[in-house]
Length: 372
Image (tube, rainbow, N blue to C red; front, top):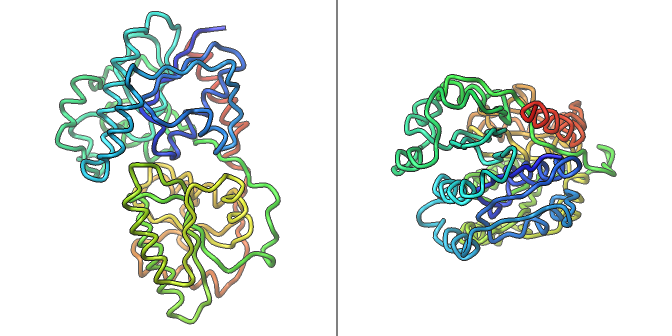
């Protein structure tokens, strides 16, 4: 049994990276002594219950910096004004961890790349450091990225000693262009949704499974508006967590829904309610371009839905690069969804492709290989 630290900058956004963090803790608890370092006001066990991840509270130590919850709360409060500041959170949590690093045999980052002083497995959702990351991806690095990179980021060529994993081939390619080494691909865990209804029993509705500014929920509303203008009786469920950082955005979404009888917003619902919507509706849409993997898209597939997403990023892999599922604009999305409704045919993608058993086995193998 090894002493393993899992480092995760914050659990406060309730997204795919947090699912990976908690799934890693769950997988490693069986064989190792696991401690989670995070800067969060969200309790890991509460979030694990939401995602139906079987964390053993008696075998997980959680270390938040002194005053860390207050800092996390403050950062979430100002997020609508200054952005999520994830690299800054990473700088803080790395500094906190490194004071204890000598206590551990291995560190697992589930919050992208770091400059660690001990052997590491690093899971890359998307590179968080290096000011030239924008040139590689078209993404915005942020004005302070050079400072955060200097304080916590590895230099090009200095990550070779870590075991590197990426959530998609697209992310792995971006990382290789920045750092000169290509991570192995380990897709996040997405369990099949049980009790899926047959296609003929499902409602003619669309589900958007997360409420956040980068998910472009208003685009989803516009897409459903456009399909309805073509005479299709289609409705939209917008459902997901409403963490403190996104409360203003969620309020705007709710106001837009109030003007449309066919749009429903449900926030902070239990996992059972989300799964009920996924297994009983036909269509799921994600509108974020260059999604690094696309956990919500994978969940639509796992629920037996026909899923749509922008034609960019890791979600192209999730949807197997199908031209009838990937769109380049709202107008194109309207046409693809309308065509799917006209065909009214069930999907043919496997709901088990990204199952948790695969993820648990693979992360244990990568950790064991790094330890030995």
